[in-house]
Each structure stands twice: as C-alpha cells, then as structure tokens.
Length: 255
Image 1 (cartoon, one colour):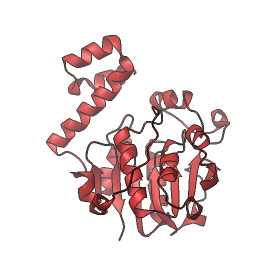
Image 2: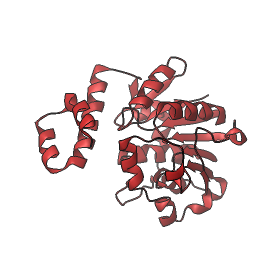
Image 3: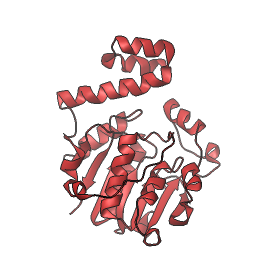
C-alpha cells in the first residue's frame, strides 16, 4: 500500500489495523476495505445496497451444487463474489458472455464451470495484449501491483476451459465492440478503473446487452475503485443499479 492509500483508509481504521500494519500489510488493505464497505452501508451512502437474493430472487430455487475453484485466487475477486457470479450463471445459463478485463481468467473459469452445456456457451474476454508495457495505457500504482503478479489465463488453462473462451486482445477504450451489440446475456466489467475507461466500458456494455441481459461491475467501493463508484453513483440517476451486499459488485438487470 502507498502512503496516500494508508492515510485515505485511516478513517476506517481501529486498533486491529495497527497490528496488521506492523505485521501483515497486505492483509491491512483487505481489512480496511471491509471496514469501508461496512461504514458506507451503515451511512447508506451511494447506490442502494441489497442482499444478493433480493436482487436475484430466482436464484433461491437452485438446488444444484455451485462449482467453485478450491485453491486461493489472485484475481481480486472474493470467495463471496465468485459464489454470487457463479450462482447467477448456474441459474440463468447465459449463452453469450462478455468480460472486460481477463486478468488471470478466474471469473471466466467460474462462469465456464457452472454452465450445464459448455457447447452452448461462448465467453468473450478482453484484455491488453501481451506487450502491454508498450501500450498507451496509464495505470495507477495500485493497478501496477496487480499487473506485476498477473498469470494470464492461469485458471482457464488449469481447469481446461479454453474451449469455451475466446480471448480477445486490445485497449477497451478503442476496441470495436460493434460486432457484439445486442447479443450479450451477461457482461462483467473489471478492466481499467480510470474514469475514461469505466465510462467507455459501461457505454459499450449497454450497447452489447440484450433485452434480458445483466451487467456486473466490480470494485464499486473497491481498491482501487473510487472512480468506478463515483461514475456508477452518477449513472444510477438514469438506471436502476444496486450494489450486492458484502461485495464490491454493482449490478443492472434489463427487462
């Protein structure tokens, strides 16, 4: 964590935070993030927050096993978030999925693991090309920490899910999404969190969404996620968007 991030998190700190700062700095980030979410929940700040099963009541009916990767994951998604996105997939069985921000393939792997008929699923996942250091994209120090530990497509390869995934490469700010307009059942946005990108990615997501589709944004109140949060709060004036309790997910359902 940077000095700036530590100071920005002090309002959510307590004595336990000091212990983590001295012994386990990486755990401190997660702890402050959890405290931050709890604080905003109690203050009812930002997009309305609801429990998962209030936003997706249909999913209560699921009596099948939700398939989760058992090993620790590095893609920034919590176990709760992975469970919820897997539950959505298990119930709705989307046929066309678009992910912006592949990272290590953890989200796409969970989507593929919870499809009953893999032959009916097509996952399109967009990430920067392998020579990203030559690419004209600006990253925060926080984002560079993630990029430095990236294992491209690790989970997709390990769990043999490459047959249902079409890996696309490009900068989402300039990528041509027009081939996919109106076709997507589920869109997951977890790419560059800077303002021009989250706005552009969201605009293209709405254009790609079909009449009954779902958009999920990651890192609402996340780390880093302030620009994501600010933009979605503004967007919620025009669209019905909810945040899923105990997660950094914001979600929109069409239809």
